[in-house]
Each structure stands twice: as C-alpha cells, then as structure tokens.
Length: 276
Image (tube, rainbow, N blue to C red):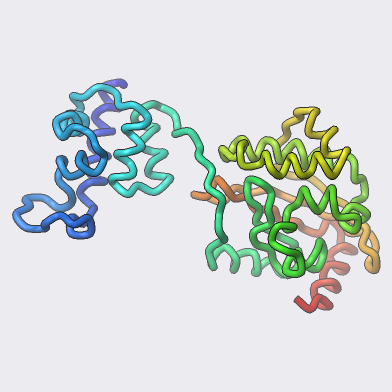
C-alpha cells in the first residue's frame, strides 16, 4: 500500500473504533481517555495481535489479508458501504461480493413504488424473485399476491407460465434477453451458486430455457421497450429503466412508463379496475 493509503486506512479504523460504545460489547466504560473501543479490544474481537493492530492504525503494519480485514470490519460493526470503503483504502478495490438472500424491502422503498400510481414498478432480487411491487405492476403484469412465494420469479413466469408467455409481443427475443441479463445480475451480486437450483429446475421444465442458458450470453438490464398484449385492453407499450438500489447490491428496481398516450389510458383503466 502507498504511504497515503496506509495513513488513510489507519485514520479510518481509528474513527470507526471511536464511535462504538464499549458497554454494548461488555467492556467497562470507566477510565477511558478517549471515546470508543480500545485498540486491544478491537484486536480481541477480531482475534488478531493487539500489537499488529496498533501498528496498522499507526501506518506501520504490513498489508492485511482479506480474511483479517473482514474480521476487523466485523469487529467494528461496519455496514456494507463502510466495509467496501475499508477495502478500497487497503487494496484499491472493493471486497468480493457475498450474496445474502434478502428477506424484504424497507417500508420507505415500498412507499416509493406506491407513489408511481400508473407506472408499473417492482423490486427484484439477484435471482430475479419479485420481492415488492406496486398496484400498477399487479394490474398490468400479474397479481403477485395471488402467487405462491416460490412462483414470484420473473424467469418462472416467462418460461413456465402460459398466460405470461402469451402476453409477450416477441416472446423469444424477450426471453433470450432476460436469461442473458439474469446471468449477469447473479454473478455481479455474488449469487452464482445460489441460482444453480433455479437453473436446474428451469432447464428440466423448459427446453427453450436450457437452450438460451447454454448460449452463455450476458447483457445489461438498462433501458428498453416492452410490448404486451392484454386480453381485454389490447396492446400495452412500455418503456422501462433499471435502477440499482443504493446500499443493496442484491436488489434492483425496474420502472415501466407508458410509451404512448393510448397505453397511459389503458394502464389507468387497469389500475382503477384492479381490486388488489
């Protein structure tokens, strides 16, 4: 590490240590000249040498291993963005992504979806499970509330649900694109191993998916257009944009906007008639 990076790393560790409450870790709060944990307490929690940790904060230690740096981050209760910053200071690159299946979205994120009254929007995981959606998405695409949790998956709907498949204007092109972007999302989020069961299930039940998956195509889910054929409201033309959820590399948001005034009116009618 360059001298400047070593200095910044030591200062950052010291600042993170100073903000922690010793009592919350079972350490005595008395006789402390400065706030936060002592260096030896951080070293104890990280299972490393107190002397070596002191040297690291003072810019005199050697470069730590990724394993040791992860233990230090855990001992200092670092958030994921803080751990990423720590690795950037130490190594010049972010840590390897480790995927953890999300359990849900925050109320604030759900409220954001709900403000998009006539623009279908949803939150998907790295394995393309639909985790949250708004009323417009339920009205235009499918009412996810009526599906078992295990079936709220974009790939399963695309390849295994005849109704969802029939609504696609150009099913093959869209299906190929979805498989390619799904592959990229899973790897980016460190979820390559978590998708194996889903891939096996889809390959066994859909020859088309097996063929597209074997192509090893990779694409980015940025912006584009989508056309649906609704059984009662006709053609629905949408423009979509994909967004990352800051601080949640495991999640992505997709927002669909009406591409024509006619589509806007059709979506409005669908939302107003939807009972969900």
